[in-house]
Amino acid sequence: MRPVQPTCALLMSKDSPALLTVRDAAERLGVTPRTLKYYEERGLVSPTRSEGRYRLYDEENLKRFGRILRLRSLGFSLQGITEMLKRPLEAVDGGHRFSTESLQQIRDAIAQQVEALDAHIETMRRELKEAQKQRAELSPDLDYLERRLAGENADALLEQRRNALGKAAGASPARRIRKSRTPAPDESS
Image 1 (cartoon, rainbow, N blue to C red):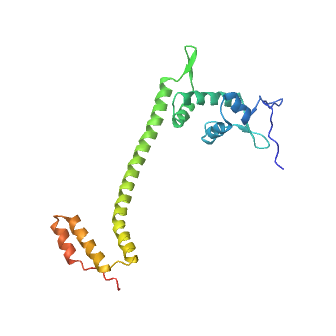
Image 2: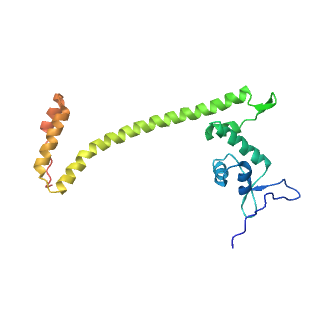
Image 3: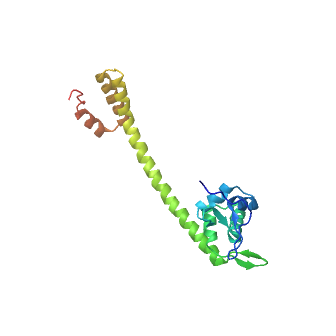
């Protein structure tokens, strides 16, 4: 039988600070339990676990969640927030801000991620171009085979392919010479 999840808002022991269940923490923060679990999955927060493996959140977790939620409300990405959470805030004019050094570290880390993504995008573009080229080369073959299976005459289809190649080659004399020397495929072999 599965253990019952604690329903009280605060779990307390003599030696540990007050802990909230995921439901209670979500209610206190004004978000869904799934939001808290998602941020945990992304590595932004690490709650403790009860003996029954339920997530339990302390005040530090709630402060961290509050910070994450504020940054999200300002439009920062989760990757950017991850970098920001790695750096301490400094007390400045009654508030807390990043030092210039921390800002530079955050900028550098995000710039590296952007550069890596740009390189990945370029690689994917090359791969896409190659895949499109291969698809374009295979499409006439597939068309020929489907038409042959549908009962069309092989000689007529091969003549159509030769004509299409001649039009594609256009004014390329070398291509026309190669084409004229290439015998038609023999389907009987």
